[in-house]
Amino acid sequence: MTQRPTAPRQPDPNIVLYDTLTRQKVTFEPTTPGRVGMYLCGPTVYSDAHLGHAKKEVAFDVIRRSFTHFGYQVRYVANITDVGHLQNDSDDGEDKMLARARLEQLEPMEVADKYFWSFMHDMEALNVLKPSINPRATGHITEQIALITELIERGHAYESAGSVYFDVRSWPQYGKLSGRKLDDQEEGVREAVREEKRDPRDFALWKNAEPGHIMRWESPWGVGFPGWHIECSAMSLKYLGEGFDIHGGGLDLQFPHHEAEIAQAEAAGHAFARYWMHNNMLTIGGEKMSKSKGNFLTIQDVLSQHDPMVVRFLLVGSHYRSITEFSDAAFESARSGYRRLEAALHEVERRLSTAPAGQHAALDAKIAAHVQAFENALRDDFNTPRAVAALFGLTTDLNAALNTGDVPQGTLEAARAAYRDLGGEVLGLFAGGAAPTQSDDSQVVGALMDLVLKARQNYRLNKQYAEADELRDTLARVGVTVEDTKDGVRWKR
Image (cartoon, rainbow, N blue to C red):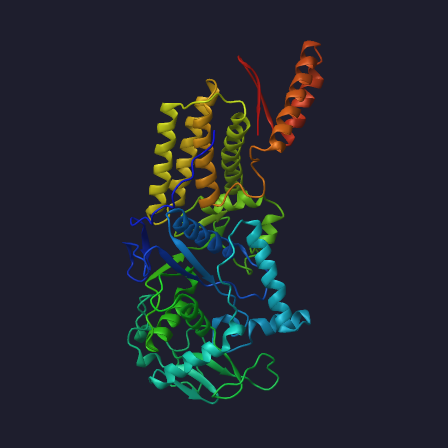
Protein backbone atom coordinates (compact mmCIF):
# COMPACT_ATOMS: atom_id res chain seq x y z
CA MET A 1 0.00 0.00 0.00
CA THR A 2 1.41 3.43 -0.96
CA GLN A 3 1.11 5.99 1.81
CA ARG A 4 0.04 9.51 0.93
CA PRO A 5 2.48 12.31 1.76
CA THR A 6 1.40 14.20 4.84
CA ALA A 7 1.50 17.94 5.36
CA PRO A 8 4.00 19.31 7.90
CA ARG A 9 2.58 19.18 11.40
CA GLN A 10 1.59 22.48 12.95
CA PRO A 11 3.45 23.29 16.21
CA ASP A 12 1.58 21.86 19.19
CA PRO A 13 0.59 24.62 21.68
CA ASN A 14 -0.20 22.18 24.52
CA ILE A 15 3.26 21.12 25.70
CA VAL A 16 3.78 21.51 29.44
CA LEU A 17 7.21 21.43 31.09
CA TYR A 18 8.54 21.80 34.62
CA ASP A 19 10.42 25.08 34.95
CA THR A 20 13.07 24.91 37.66
CA LEU A 21 13.12 28.70 37.96
CA THR A 22 9.44 29.06 38.86
CA ARG A 23 9.24 25.57 40.46
CA GLN A 24 6.05 24.65 38.65
CA LYS A 25 4.72 23.15 35.46
CA VAL A 26 4.05 25.75 32.79
CA THR A 27 2.74 25.73 29.24
CA PHE A 28 5.60 26.16 26.80
CA GLU A 29 5.39 29.32 24.69
CA PRO A 30 8.30 29.79 22.26
CA THR A 31 10.07 33.10 21.81
CA THR A 32 9.66 32.69 18.05
CA PRO A 33 6.49 30.91 16.89
CA GLY A 34 7.22 27.44 15.56
CA ARG A 35 10.85 27.43 16.70
CA VAL A 36 12.63 26.20 19.83
CA GLY A 37 16.07 27.33 20.97
CA MET A 38 17.67 24.89 23.42
CA TYR A 39 21.03 25.11 25.18
CA LEU A 40 22.51 22.17 27.05
CA CYS A 41 25.58 22.27 29.27
CA GLY A 42 27.84 19.66 27.73
CA PRO A 43 30.83 17.79 29.15
CA THR A 44 34.25 18.96 30.26
CA VAL A 45 36.33 16.80 27.92
CA TYR A 46 39.14 15.69 30.21
CA SER A 47 38.14 12.03 30.66
CA ASP A 48 35.76 9.39 29.33
CA ALA A 49 32.08 10.18 29.78
CA HIS A 50 30.28 8.44 32.65
CA LEU A 51 26.74 7.22 33.21
CA GLY A 52 25.65 10.62 34.53
CA HIS A 53 26.43 12.05 31.12
CA ALA A 54 24.36 9.30 29.49
CA LYS A 55 21.35 10.14 31.66
CA LYS A 56 21.55 13.85 30.82
CA GLU A 57 22.24 13.48 27.12
CA VAL A 58 19.50 10.90 26.49
CA ALA A 59 16.98 12.88 28.56
CA PHE A 60 17.44 16.08 26.58
CA ASP A 61 17.75 14.19 23.31
CA VAL A 62 14.21 12.87 23.89
CA ILE A 63 12.99 16.37 24.76
CA ARG A 64 14.53 17.70 21.56
CA ARG A 65 13.06 14.84 19.49
CA SER A 66 9.65 15.43 21.09
CA PHE A 67 9.58 19.08 20.07
CA THR A 68 10.46 18.03 16.52
CA HIS A 69 7.68 15.42 16.57
CA PHE A 70 5.21 18.07 17.72
CA GLY A 71 5.98 20.27 14.72
CA TYR A 72 8.72 22.62 15.98
CA GLN A 73 11.99 23.51 14.30
CA VAL A 74 14.68 23.06 16.93
CA ARG A 75 18.10 24.67 17.20
CA TYR A 76 19.97 22.58 19.75
CA VAL A 77 23.23 24.00 21.09
CA ALA A 78 25.43 21.90 23.40
CA ASN A 79 28.78 23.28 24.47
CA ILE A 80 32.10 21.59 25.04
CA THR A 81 34.19 22.85 27.99
CA ASP A 82 37.89 22.64 27.20
CA VAL A 83 39.30 25.37 29.46
CA GLY A 84 38.53 27.10 32.76
CA HIS A 85 36.85 24.26 34.68
CA LEU A 86 39.04 23.97 37.75
CA GLN A 87 39.31 21.11 40.20
CA ASN A 88 36.37 20.89 42.65
CA ASP A 89 34.40 23.42 40.53
CA SER A 90 36.11 26.24 42.42
CA ASP A 91 38.11 29.36 41.57
CA ASP A 92 41.28 27.77 42.91
CA GLY A 93 43.19 24.70 41.88
CA GLU A 94 44.39 23.32 38.60
CA ASP A 95 42.46 23.31 35.36
CA LYS A 96 41.05 19.82 34.80
CA MET A 97 42.34 19.85 31.23
CA LEU A 98 45.86 20.70 32.32
CA ALA A 99 45.86 18.05 35.05
CA ARG A 100 44.90 15.36 32.53
CA ALA A 101 47.38 16.68 29.97
CA ARG A 102 50.20 16.34 32.48
CA LEU A 103 49.04 12.87 33.50
CA GLU A 104 48.89 11.59 29.91
CA GLN A 105 51.87 13.67 28.70
CA LEU A 106 49.79 15.32 26.01
CA GLU A 107 49.02 18.87 24.92
CA PRO A 108 45.74 20.19 26.41
CA MET A 109 44.14 20.32 22.98
CA GLU A 110 45.16 16.71 22.37
CA VAL A 111 43.31 15.82 25.56
CA ALA A 112 40.29 17.86 24.47
CA ASP A 113 40.13 16.20 21.05
CA LYS A 114 40.74 12.70 22.43
CA TYR A 115 37.89 12.86 24.92
CA PHE A 116 35.61 14.91 22.70
CA TRP A 117 35.64 12.16 20.09
CA SER A 118 35.32 9.51 22.79
CA PHE A 119 32.21 11.33 24.01
CA MET A 120 30.79 11.63 20.49
CA HIS A 121 31.29 7.91 19.86
CA ASP A 122 29.44 7.14 23.09
CA MET A 123 26.58 9.39 22.02
CA GLU A 124 26.43 7.79 18.59
CA ALA A 125 26.18 4.35 20.20
CA LEU A 126 23.29 5.59 22.36
CA ASN A 127 21.62 7.12 19.29
CA VAL A 128 21.83 10.67 20.64
CA LEU A 129 21.40 13.15 17.80
CA LYS A 130 24.29 15.49 17.08
CA PRO A 131 23.72 19.09 18.25
CA SER A 132 22.87 21.75 15.72
CA ILE A 133 25.92 23.62 17.05
CA ASN A 134 28.68 22.20 19.29
CA PRO A 135 30.70 25.27 20.38
CA ARG A 136 33.93 24.99 22.37
CA ALA A 137 34.96 27.40 25.09
CA THR A 138 38.44 27.90 23.60
CA GLY A 139 36.86 28.99 20.31
CA HIS A 140 34.89 31.80 21.95
CA ILE A 141 37.42 33.72 24.05
CA THR A 142 36.55 36.98 22.23
CA GLU A 143 32.85 36.67 23.13
CA GLN A 144 33.67 35.90 26.75
CA ILE A 145 35.99 38.91 27.06
CA ALA A 146 33.27 41.13 25.54
CA LEU A 147 30.69 39.93 28.09
CA ILE A 148 33.12 40.45 30.99
CA THR A 149 33.82 43.98 29.73
CA GLU A 150 30.08 44.74 29.76
CA LEU A 151 29.83 43.54 33.36
CA ILE A 152 32.72 45.74 34.46
CA GLU A 153 31.22 48.78 32.70
CA ARG A 154 27.88 48.20 34.46
CA GLY A 155 29.52 47.91 37.86
CA HIS A 156 28.86 44.19 38.37
CA ALA A 157 32.45 42.97 38.04
CA TYR A 158 35.89 44.17 39.12
CA GLU A 159 39.50 43.50 38.24
CA SER A 160 41.87 42.36 40.98
CA ALA A 161 45.47 41.19 40.58
CA GLY A 162 44.97 40.34 36.92
CA SER A 163 41.76 38.39 37.52
CA VAL A 164 38.15 39.56 37.15
CA TYR A 165 35.37 38.61 39.58
CA PHE A 166 31.60 38.96 39.48
CA ASP A 167 30.38 41.11 42.38
CA VAL A 168 27.47 39.06 43.76
CA ARG A 169 26.52 41.87 46.18
CA SER A 170 25.77 44.08 43.17
CA TRP A 171 23.13 41.65 41.91
CA PRO A 172 20.38 41.00 44.51
CA GLN A 173 18.68 38.38 42.28
CA TYR A 174 21.66 36.04 42.66
CA GLY A 175 20.27 32.80 44.06
CA LYS A 176 16.83 32.92 42.42
CA LEU A 177 17.30 29.67 40.49
CA SER A 178 18.57 27.54 43.36
CA GLY A 179 16.57 29.33 46.04
CA ARG A 180 19.73 30.10 48.01
CA LYS A 181 19.79 33.45 49.72
CA LEU A 182 23.10 35.24 49.48
CA ASP A 183 23.42 35.75 53.21
CA ASP A 184 22.93 32.03 53.79
CA GLN A 185 25.90 31.09 51.62
CA GLU A 186 28.60 30.60 54.20
CA GLU A 187 32.07 31.90 53.66
CA GLY A 188 34.53 29.29 52.46
CA VAL A 189 32.00 26.47 52.07
CA ARG A 190 32.95 25.69 48.45
CA GLU A 191 36.44 27.11 48.35
CA ALA A 192 39.17 28.80 50.32
CA VAL A 193 38.72 32.57 50.55
CA ARG A 194 40.99 34.47 48.18
CA GLU A 195 42.30 37.80 49.47
CA GLU A 196 41.87 39.39 46.05
CA LYS A 197 38.09 38.99 46.27
CA ARG A 198 35.85 41.65 47.80
CA ASP A 199 33.49 38.95 48.98
CA PRO A 200 34.24 35.22 49.29
CA ARG A 201 31.08 34.44 47.33
CA ASP A 202 32.25 36.39 44.28
CA PHE A 203 33.19 34.07 41.41
CA ALA A 204 35.82 34.29 38.69
CA LEU A 205 35.05 35.59 35.22
CA TRP A 206 38.69 35.74 34.15
CA LYS A 207 41.71 34.20 35.85
CA ASN A 208 45.23 35.51 35.81
CA ALA A 209 47.54 32.90 34.25
CA GLU A 210 50.49 32.18 36.47
CA PRO A 211 53.90 31.48 34.88
CA GLY A 212 53.92 28.06 33.26
CA HIS A 213 50.15 27.94 32.76
CA ILE A 214 49.87 26.59 29.20
CA MET A 215 46.33 27.68 28.31
CA ARG A 216 46.49 31.50 28.21
CA TRP A 217 45.12 34.39 26.16
CA GLU A 218 45.67 38.14 26.00
CA SER A 219 42.94 40.26 27.59
CA PRO A 220 42.44 43.87 28.80
CA TRP A 221 43.40 42.61 32.28
CA GLY A 222 46.53 40.74 31.30
CA VAL A 223 47.32 37.23 30.16
CA GLY A 224 44.86 34.69 31.52
CA PHE A 225 41.97 32.35 30.81
CA PRO A 226 38.18 32.47 31.28
CA GLY A 227 36.36 31.21 34.35
CA TRP A 228 34.13 28.18 34.07
CA HIS A 229 30.72 29.89 34.09
CA ILE A 230 31.22 32.71 31.60
CA GLU A 231 31.52 30.44 28.54
CA CYS A 232 27.92 29.22 28.66
CA SER A 233 26.45 32.71 29.04
CA ALA A 234 28.49 33.97 26.10
CA MET A 235 27.93 31.03 23.76
CA SER A 236 24.21 30.55 24.43
CA LEU A 237 23.54 34.22 23.74
CA LYS A 238 25.69 34.13 20.60
CA TYR A 239 23.90 31.19 19.01
CA LEU A 240 20.38 31.41 20.44
CA GLY A 241 19.94 35.13 21.02
CA GLU A 242 18.31 37.20 23.73
CA GLY A 243 15.55 35.51 25.71
CA PHE A 244 16.05 32.08 24.16
CA ASP A 245 13.68 29.30 25.13
CA ILE A 246 15.23 26.49 27.18
CA HIS A 247 18.43 25.99 29.14
CA GLY A 248 19.06 22.43 30.32
CA GLY A 249 21.55 20.47 32.34
CA GLY A 250 22.07 18.14 35.25
CA LEU A 251 20.66 18.95 38.67
CA ASP A 252 24.23 19.16 40.00
CA LEU A 253 24.82 22.23 37.80
CA GLN A 254 21.93 24.24 39.22
CA PHE A 255 24.30 25.84 41.73
CA PRO A 256 26.74 27.45 41.23
CA HIS A 257 27.08 27.04 37.46
CA HIS A 258 23.59 27.88 36.23
CA GLU A 259 23.05 30.45 38.96
CA ALA A 260 26.20 32.21 37.79
CA GLU A 261 25.14 32.01 34.14
CA ILE A 262 21.89 33.86 34.87
CA ALA A 263 23.63 36.54 36.93
CA GLN A 264 26.32 37.16 34.31
CA ALA A 265 23.92 37.48 31.41
CA GLU A 266 21.18 39.51 33.09
CA ALA A 267 23.57 41.83 34.95
CA ALA A 268 25.17 42.61 31.58
CA GLY A 269 21.72 43.64 30.30
CA HIS A 270 20.83 40.53 28.30
CA ALA A 271 17.52 38.66 28.53
CA PHE A 272 18.51 35.06 29.24
CA ALA A 273 16.83 31.63 29.19
CA ARG A 274 13.07 31.73 29.73
CA TYR A 275 12.72 28.11 30.94
CA TRP A 276 15.16 26.03 32.98
CA MET A 277 15.08 22.24 32.92
CA HIS A 278 17.21 19.89 35.03
CA ASN A 279 17.55 16.13 34.91
CA ASN A 280 17.97 14.15 38.13
CA MET A 281 20.88 11.89 39.01
CA LEU A 282 21.33 8.13 38.91
CA THR A 283 22.19 5.45 41.44
CA ILE A 284 24.05 2.17 41.10
CA GLY A 285 22.84 -0.56 43.40
CA GLY A 286 20.89 2.01 45.38
CA GLU A 287 23.89 4.32 45.96
CA LYS A 288 24.95 7.50 44.23
CA MET A 289 27.71 6.85 41.72
CA SER A 290 31.09 7.82 43.17
CA LYS A 291 34.71 6.97 42.46
CA SER A 292 35.37 6.76 46.21
CA LYS A 293 32.66 4.10 46.57
CA GLY A 294 34.07 2.03 43.76
CA ASN A 295 30.81 2.08 41.76
CA PHE A 296 31.91 4.63 39.18
CA LEU A 297 31.13 3.48 35.63
CA THR A 298 31.92 5.06 32.29
CA ILE A 299 29.55 4.76 29.36
CA GLN A 300 32.12 2.54 27.67
CA ASP A 301 32.15 0.24 30.71
CA VAL A 302 28.41 -0.28 30.36
CA LEU A 303 28.33 -0.56 26.57
CA SER A 304 30.95 -3.31 26.73
CA GLN A 305 28.41 -5.44 28.61
CA HIS A 306 25.01 -4.28 27.36
CA ASP A 307 23.26 -3.55 24.09
CA PRO A 308 23.27 0.26 23.66
CA MET A 309 19.55 0.21 22.90
CA VAL A 310 18.86 -1.65 26.14
CA VAL A 311 20.85 1.02 28.00
CA ARG A 312 18.86 3.75 26.27
CA PHE A 313 15.60 1.93 27.00
CA LEU A 314 16.53 1.77 30.68
CA LEU A 315 17.19 5.52 30.67
CA VAL A 316 13.93 6.50 28.94
CA GLY A 317 12.06 4.14 31.24
CA SER A 318 12.46 6.64 34.07
CA HIS A 319 11.34 10.27 34.00
CA TYR A 320 14.10 12.80 33.41
CA ARG A 321 13.35 14.44 36.79
CA SER A 322 13.45 11.10 38.62
CA ILE A 323 16.46 9.15 39.84
CA THR A 324 17.44 6.30 37.53
CA GLU A 325 18.66 3.07 39.12
CA PHE A 326 21.38 1.05 37.41
CA SER A 327 21.57 -2.52 38.68
CA ASP A 328 21.63 -6.06 37.32
CA ALA A 329 17.90 -6.36 37.98
CA ALA A 330 17.19 -3.04 36.24
CA PHE A 331 19.17 -4.10 33.17
CA GLU A 332 17.44 -7.48 33.04
CA SER A 333 14.05 -5.81 33.19
CA ALA A 334 15.06 -3.29 30.51
CA ARG A 335 16.42 -6.05 28.28
CA SER A 336 13.22 -8.05 28.56
CA GLY A 337 11.01 -5.02 27.90
CA TYR A 338 13.02 -3.79 24.96
CA ARG A 339 13.14 -7.22 23.32
CA ARG A 340 9.37 -7.46 23.60
CA LEU A 341 8.90 -4.20 21.70
CA GLU A 342 11.58 -5.10 19.19
CA ALA A 343 10.02 -8.52 18.55
CA ALA A 344 6.60 -6.99 17.96
CA LEU A 345 8.01 -4.54 15.42
CA HIS A 346 9.89 -7.32 13.66
CA GLU A 347 6.79 -9.49 13.50
CA VAL A 348 4.80 -6.64 11.96
CA GLU A 349 7.46 -6.07 9.31
CA ARG A 350 7.79 -9.80 8.61
CA ARG A 351 4.08 -10.13 7.93
CA LEU A 352 3.66 -7.02 5.81
CA SER A 353 4.71 -8.57 2.49
CA THR A 354 2.12 -11.36 2.69
CA ALA A 355 -0.70 -9.58 4.53
CA PRO A 356 -4.05 -9.18 2.76
CA ALA A 357 -5.15 -5.70 1.74
CA GLY A 358 -7.55 -3.76 3.94
CA GLN A 359 -7.96 -2.46 7.47
CA HIS A 360 -8.85 -3.97 10.84
CA ALA A 361 -11.18 -1.27 12.19
CA ALA A 362 -11.15 -2.36 15.84
CA LEU A 363 -7.36 -2.69 15.95
CA ASP A 364 -6.94 0.59 14.06
CA ALA A 365 -8.90 2.33 16.80
CA LYS A 366 -6.73 0.74 19.50
CA ILE A 367 -3.53 1.78 17.71
CA ALA A 368 -4.80 5.36 17.43
CA ALA A 369 -5.66 5.36 21.15
CA HIS A 370 -2.17 4.20 22.11
CA VAL A 371 -0.59 6.83 19.86
CA GLN A 372 -2.74 9.46 21.55
CA ALA A 373 -1.75 8.19 25.00
CA PHE A 374 1.93 8.29 24.00
CA GLU A 375 1.71 11.87 22.77
CA ASN A 376 -0.29 13.01 25.80
CA ALA A 377 2.42 11.55 28.04
CA LEU A 378 5.10 13.59 26.30
CA ARG A 379 2.98 16.73 26.34
CA ASP A 380 2.95 16.38 30.15
CA ASP A 381 6.57 17.32 30.95
CA PHE A 382 7.98 14.62 28.64
CA ASN A 383 6.74 11.72 30.74
CA THR A 384 8.67 8.90 29.08
CA PRO A 385 7.56 6.13 31.52
CA ARG A 386 3.93 6.74 30.50
CA ALA A 387 4.97 6.92 26.86
CA VAL A 388 6.74 3.55 27.13
CA ALA A 389 3.63 2.14 28.82
CA ALA A 390 1.61 3.22 25.77
CA LEU A 391 3.98 1.25 23.52
CA PHE A 392 3.53 -1.82 25.70
CA GLY A 393 -0.25 -1.36 25.49
CA LEU A 394 0.05 -1.24 21.72
CA THR A 395 2.16 -4.41 21.78
CA THR A 396 -0.35 -6.30 23.91
CA ASP A 397 -3.27 -5.48 21.60
CA LEU A 398 -1.22 -6.13 18.48
CA ASN A 399 0.05 -9.51 19.65
CA ALA A 400 -3.47 -10.56 20.58
CA ALA A 401 -4.63 -9.76 17.05
CA LEU A 402 -1.64 -11.44 15.40
CA ASN A 403 -2.21 -14.61 17.41
CA THR A 404 -5.80 -14.93 16.18
CA GLY A 405 -5.06 -14.72 12.47
CA ASP A 406 -3.95 -12.45 9.67
CA VAL A 407 -3.97 -8.68 10.22
CA PRO A 408 -4.62 -6.57 7.07
CA GLN A 409 -1.79 -4.67 5.46
CA GLY A 410 -3.17 -1.20 6.20
CA THR A 411 -3.40 -1.91 9.91
CA LEU A 412 0.09 -3.43 9.99
CA GLU A 413 1.43 -0.27 8.34
CA ALA A 414 -0.27 1.84 11.02
CA ALA A 415 1.32 -0.31 13.72
CA ARG A 416 4.74 -0.11 12.09
CA ALA A 417 4.43 3.68 11.81
CA ALA A 418 3.57 3.87 15.52
CA TYR A 419 6.65 1.87 16.52
CA ARG A 420 8.94 3.68 14.12
CA ASP A 421 7.65 7.21 14.71
CA LEU A 422 7.13 7.01 18.46
CA GLY A 423 9.58 4.38 19.66
CA GLY A 424 12.17 5.10 16.98
CA GLU A 425 12.07 8.79 16.09
CA VAL A 426 10.92 10.16 19.45
CA LEU A 427 12.39 7.80 22.04
CA GLY A 428 15.39 6.99 19.84
CA LEU A 429 15.01 3.20 20.02
CA PHE A 430 15.39 0.51 17.33
CA ALA A 431 18.65 2.03 16.09
CA GLY A 432 21.60 0.22 14.59
CA GLY A 433 19.50 -2.26 12.64
CA ALA A 434 18.15 -3.90 15.79
CA ALA A 435 14.76 -4.35 14.17
CA PRO A 436 15.03 -5.03 10.44
CA THR A 437 12.95 -3.14 7.94
CA GLN A 438 10.83 -4.74 5.24
CA SER A 439 13.61 -5.10 2.69
CA ASP A 440 15.37 -7.70 0.61
CA ASP A 441 17.36 -8.70 3.71
CA SER A 442 14.26 -9.44 5.75
CA GLN A 443 12.80 -11.46 2.87
CA VAL A 444 15.97 -13.51 2.74
CA VAL A 445 15.77 -14.12 6.49
CA GLY A 446 12.13 -15.18 6.12
CA ALA A 447 12.98 -17.63 3.34
CA LEU A 448 15.85 -19.13 5.34
CA MET A 449 13.63 -19.52 8.38
CA ASP A 450 11.06 -21.37 6.30
CA LEU A 451 13.78 -23.85 5.31
CA VAL A 452 14.94 -24.20 8.92
CA LEU A 453 11.41 -24.88 10.17
CA LYS A 454 10.86 -27.46 7.42
CA ALA A 455 14.07 -29.19 8.46
CA ARG A 456 12.91 -29.21 12.07
CA GLN A 457 9.53 -30.62 11.05
CA ASN A 458 11.28 -33.41 9.11
CA TYR A 459 13.36 -34.24 12.19
CA ARG A 460 10.19 -34.56 14.24
CA LEU A 461 8.41 -36.70 11.62
CA ASN A 462 11.40 -39.04 11.64
CA LYS A 463 11.36 -39.06 15.45
CA GLN A 464 14.75 -37.36 15.58
CA TYR A 465 13.66 -35.29 18.55
CA ALA A 466 17.18 -34.53 19.83
CA GLU A 467 18.11 -32.97 16.48
CA ALA A 468 14.85 -31.00 16.39
CA ASP A 469 15.43 -29.68 19.91
CA GLU A 470 19.03 -28.79 19.10
CA LEU A 471 17.85 -26.76 16.12
CA ARG A 472 15.28 -24.95 18.28
CA ASP A 473 17.85 -24.26 21.02
CA THR A 474 20.37 -22.92 18.52
CA LEU A 475 17.80 -20.46 17.23
CA ALA A 476 16.94 -19.44 20.80
CA ARG A 477 20.57 -18.59 21.51
CA VAL A 478 20.51 -16.00 18.72
CA GLY A 479 17.19 -14.55 19.85
CA VAL A 480 14.74 -16.47 17.65
CA THR A 481 11.79 -18.16 19.37
CA VAL A 482 10.00 -21.08 17.73
CA GLU A 483 6.39 -21.68 18.78
CA ASP A 484 4.30 -24.78 18.03
CA THR A 485 0.67 -23.69 17.77
CA LYS A 486 -2.56 -25.35 16.65
CA ASP A 487 -2.22 -23.43 13.39
CA GLY A 488 1.33 -24.59 12.77
CA VAL A 489 4.86 -23.52 13.61
CA ARG A 490 5.67 -19.81 14.05
CA TRP A 491 8.88 -17.97 14.78
CA LYS A 492 9.70 -14.52 16.03
CA ARG A 493 12.60 -12.48 17.33
